[in-house]
Amino acid sequence: MSLVSIVVPVYFNAPSLPDLLKEFQKVADRNPDLGFEFVFVDDGSKDDSYAVLERLAQDEWRVSILKLSRNFGSNAAILAGLTHARGDAVVAIAADLQDPPALIHDMIGKWREGNKVILAAREERDDPGLTSLMADTFYALFRRFAIKTMPKRGFDFFLIDRQVCGLITSIQENNAYLMGLILWMGFNPVVIPYHRREREKRYGRSMWTFAKKLKYFVDSFVAFSYLPVRFASLLGFTLSGLGLLYALFIVGLRIFTHFDVEGWTSLMVVMLIVSGVQMVMIGILGEYLWRNLDETRKRPRYIVENIIETRQTKEVDQLQHFPELDGHVHD
View (cartoon, rainbow, N blue to C red):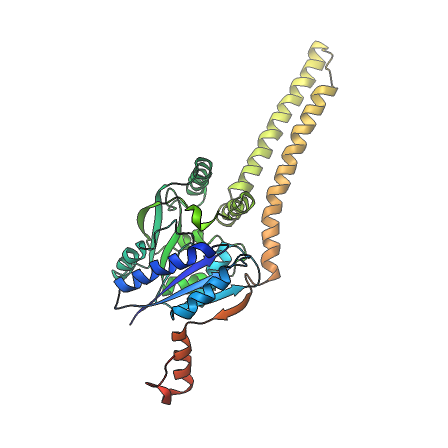
């Protein structure tokens, strides 16, 4: 029997977890010929998320829990889940129920047809206007300057085959943009469009802050595009050319017309502009150098503090160590 793993990064999602598990159980009921495991990764939540997950694991034998030692970010939490997952197919989905878990059934159908990467791509979204504008701008830039196969409104919800999962977890990048890696690998992704719902108030507010969005934006472009460095070089050449032309113009005025050039104001304007541009260029180079330094440190991408395995996994481990118990292992 094939096994499907569903990986969920959890961060301040205590209110939505019971309803999310019910949706997973419905998906499992619609695919009785498949085995399922539900891998929840608590990414350093400070609410009751972990306690809620422990209670759910007592009632649902297919639940396993990874508790990270602190908040490492959504990408790291998903990678921890992918590394722990044992499934022949692995699904990753957010815990806030804005993405419809029922769509997993359709994704499994595409996987059964032999596809190794299935993306649930947002066709429409009910998020606030500013959030939608920022997201659309980011994905438009990413499509234009980094990976052209990125769906128009992006994706965070996907299913990958065991082969692809193994390749992703083998890549050692501390600041990897996971969605970019999936597209970079190829495998002719199949896209299933869906309408992203607004987050229900009873499920709390999003912890996706502006600072995290900014880091996400920078990490994505630095990892998959040379555009920032190329832009800095182009801007430097442009300003150098303009500066040379302006210098020739001033010298010409002084030599041929004896025009008395006023110096202080124009000099300060030029210095301020050039100094600002230099700082921007240094900042862009610094972003690349910082990530290079971060990679050379070889620090782990996440630290798992505690693991609660599915009862199914415990039984398999028992049978591997004590084969004579086959047929006699019960909860």
